[in-house]
Image 1 (cartoon, chains in turn cyan, orange):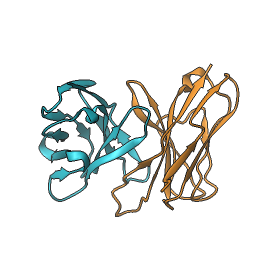
Image 2: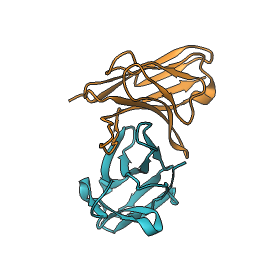
Image 3: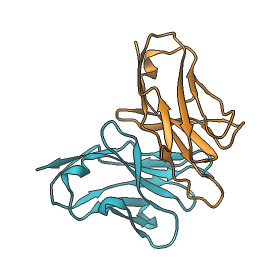
Image 4: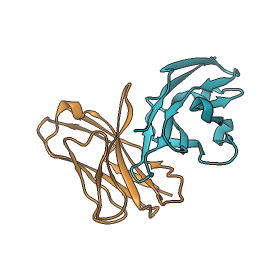
Length: 114
Length: 115
């Protein structure tokens, strides 16, 4: 069965610094991968997705992620974080044939220091 | 643009009571899902539906039931609530098809407390 691991429960970054959130997946076939962001008290918003083609994908809010098949990773990056980026970030992989939704990691809580 | 509407936003419920969380989408997506979110556990799939008239069990289906009478509505019912069902519940939808990436669109969530 597919699974997603986000090794970091919490990450603290200074405003203006670069960010990398780690995500590792376990899936037998070519994965469809997603990053979602959740602000406090809100639902989840899609940041970006990968399903084929260029392994570096661009998303909203200045985020990007790189798919590395050899490392089974799909890490999320941003060159310079803003205080408004403080949120919970979830990595997800499409389950099976896709009909039964996405499998999510447990999330990484991002704290921005002034 | 409403997208997905969930109700109620928040509810406190006595153990043993029956509760239905409502979910309506206006995007004509064929697939719908219910997840629960718990601190430290992320989002776990409760039930899903690929099309009206069909439903399936997710990772944590026990104590929950769903129905999909039409494309737009996907209610989640707790027949007899227990404290372990205290959680935030998210409804989601997807225009799932063989060639689609399976991106999910989420509602704002329903916070349920069972005492």
